[in-house]
Image (cartoon, rainbow, N blue to C red):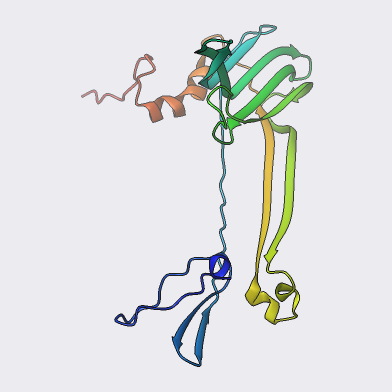
Length: 236
């Protein structure tokens, strides 16, 4: 049990207990006939939110694409009876890819043909000749969206649970006392992927609506929009 639960003796010249070195309960012998057990409990909570807000300006009945991807290279090994050579095998892309084709219809409606793909690398490659594992969520459809509205066009909800128990045979099955000879872990994960679309038709012949829609992003980037500045003047 020493390798599983970290059972050991403290330093007689010291005043501290040795650090726990197992995955279950840890016990040390303080004095003959006296025992002490330290039960370790670990809870890890990871909460995160990823928000991607791409914007694209496109003419009526024209196709627009927006790609923001990360390329990861991997090697390729060619083995023969005498020698093995390693060369460039290719790249694997992960990121955000959006394709949209709008069509203005009657009644302030927009007919959108869109394709949205969000992918990311979820771990390291097990072999240099293999690309890393990648997870991809993709949504593709054709939908009518009211002008100026934000609507949810689709989404995906994932939830998984797992319970794992590692114990010493027979001892870990004893009621109550079996917890001292076992290690239990519970994993629960939830993931949500939703796609929101907000469409706006620019109708002003002087592009005033386009200027208004770009103002917030231009101020955040500290850029000048090039339009003349109108300032009041005091005439005496």
